[in-house]
Length: 459
Image (cartoon, rainbow, N blue to C red; front, side, top):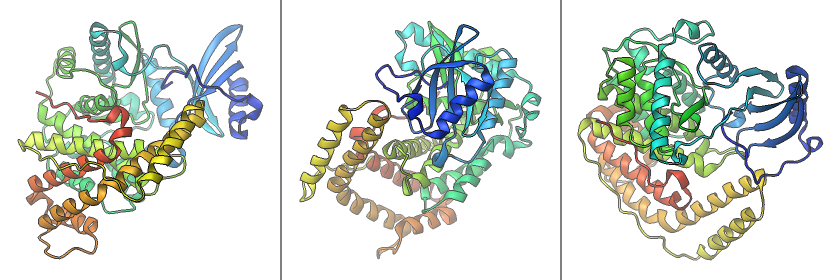
């Protein structure tokens, strides 16, 4: 499972569900041999259900985890995660048992594990430290599993420094290139930097959680790993790097002591430069996944969430690269929202959607909430972006060396990065930092857990 059910959400009766979910429930009862007593749809973009079932007279809580659908990143099929869970269970690590795969609609049937997600909800500092230490021990245990166990289920083993350094980068790049629908200088700069700076002296190969530090916990202990859909074979440094990205969404607390715990457990100290490299590589997966979606959002998307993931994680990569190079990054000027002729209509839309979301529950509340977030963002774009855009256009033209306005600044900037990015890293990093912070200011009131977040810089 990936989260706990909501206590206030109300579900329809089973007969009111769409036909595909009725088929899924029928499959669970038939193949798992249980009776569904109640259920709740998890209020999120990805189809998922919490089930209260009974088998042989005993309670059997289950979790159904579906495919991403229109938001699929196209890197691994859903079956991949199920197989990884099964390997980890056989190795004694805390993961949910897999009861099977529903073929139509495709969903994994898992145990609903005890505990809660998000370490920032720890009851006190002592529990936070205890849980994080336990996770670092379990991560070391994961990395100690023979990679052949994962090769046996179809996971490719990287061979050579570039393959080990890039890890699953080729998969993400292939998916991004296939879906790319606009120029993107920041993403292209990151790809170029990674290829210019791949570590050459790394050899150890291990199974990576990849989107690391996702777990449930209770009473100071980790109760289950979560979300192994991206698991692959690569450099163990990559999972420490992934923790820095996770920390921005779900604060983990100081990471330097956690990394020291891992080094003591494994007997190997990983250089900062290698962790920084993999931080940039891991962070890049988020903007590459989000860029095509925010350019052409499907109806099911929480647009602001994806927009925030894109810009915050793009900035995180910029900040890590700059830190590794000893470069101080500039700050843009953020104007105050300016009233315009359209402001009253924007304000009214925000108020009405805000009232509607507060009057509903469950999945409908989620849908209204995502639409309200869009309205807040658009109001600030209308009132703040014109001044920002003028300043940013001048900065881009200065880098391009243009005295007349380009026909397509985004396309020309991307072409400049591809041709001359290596020779202008400091100037480009400064521009990208300003671009990110300007966009973040536009959705700041509805950024929620990502408001003002910065990636932890490590010793």
